[in-house]
Amino acid sequence: MEIHPIRTEDDYKTTLEEVSAFFDNEPDPGTSEGDRFEVLLTLLGAYEAKHFPVGAPDPVEAIRFRMDQQGLTVADMQPYIGNPNRVYEVLNRKRGLSLAMIRRLHAGLGIPADALIG
View 1 (cartoon, rainbow, N blue to C red):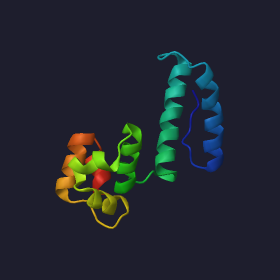
View 2 (view 1 turned 90 degrees about the horizontal axis):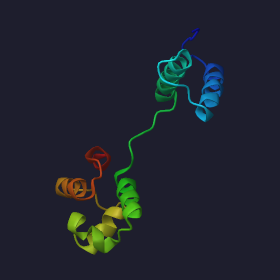
View 3 (view 1 turned 60 degrees about the vertical axis):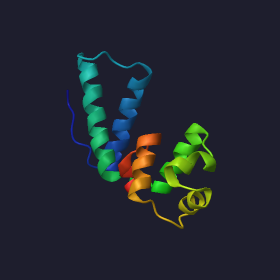
View 4 (view 1 turned 180 degrees about the vertical axis):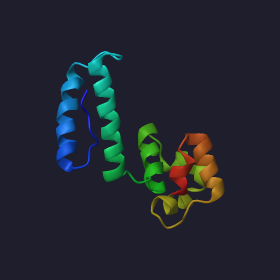
């Protein structure tokens, strides 16, 4: 099994092409092809983490995302943020989240605290 680190964009593209062939017919774990597939995925993950980092979500975007997921309205957010005016202020970035709001949003809606801290 000849595998080398992914150092350049060309290495990355070549490895992606090789791995994409395995997605239609994924090799069995423990086989030589399965081991190669697993190692290449690990190398791709490391390269992508270094060259294409994903930043933390914006707290307001995290709240809006959860509202969209669960079909929640401003009225539904009152137990977590406060009266409708306060909810609108938070959603329009006029007011930051308090620690109490972060705790309630995390406990009640399961929004990760680190996403709410921003």
